[in-house]
Length: 97
Image 1 (cartoon, rainbow, N blue to C red):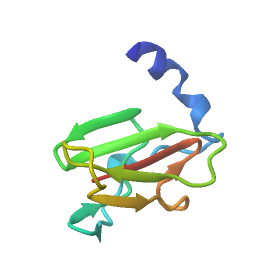
Image 2 (cartoon, helix red, strand yellow):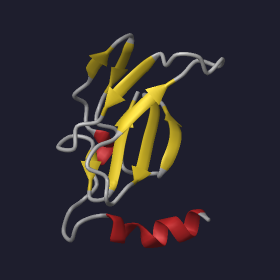
Image 3 (cartoon, rainbow, N blue to C red):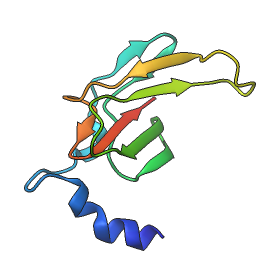
Image 4 (cartoon, rainbow, N blue to C red):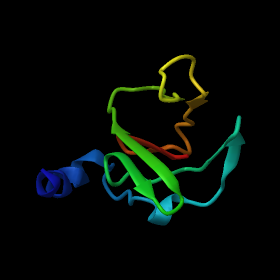
């Protein structure tokens, strides 16, 4: 599965656009969480040395919101609206928490 995703990723990015190296470093606070741009790769949720990165392919989305829940799935701990200028590369929305 990983090989299939890696071979097809160029179609997720606009022609000539490159994925940001390391996902940027301009962090901002959202509630009790520190978030930054994140990285469009790998797709899905992934743990990094700097937090949890989330990357979702959504070619027709005009907005994206990440909801963070505790184990009990009650009220969300935080809701983070992604900025398309900062948190989107081609068709991939991404953020690191």
